[in-house]
Length: 99
Image 1: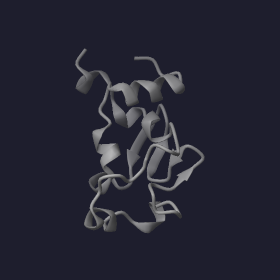
Image 2: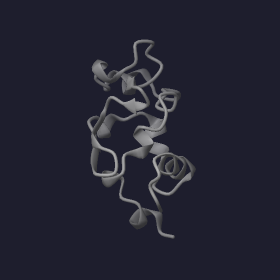
Image 3: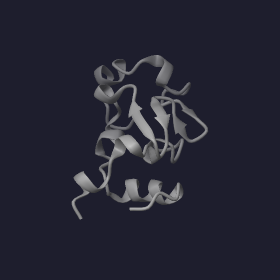
């Protein structure tokens, strides 16, 4: 399976709505964190602000059309999630999105 072509992140968004505990800051430098607009940062500054399980930077509707409002400066955990990897597949399963 060629995960780069089999999964279209911009018509999914499941990984950005799967868990409020997942979009955490862990290896970002202070300079990288300073680039993320405060309106998207959780009150405890440990990760992204979420509304329920949904990251506040997710734009659009899951399974339809989605994007990230801070894609260029998103946290490392978001950068390492790849189409078809364990996190992707777990989130897709949670939402009942087939592969």
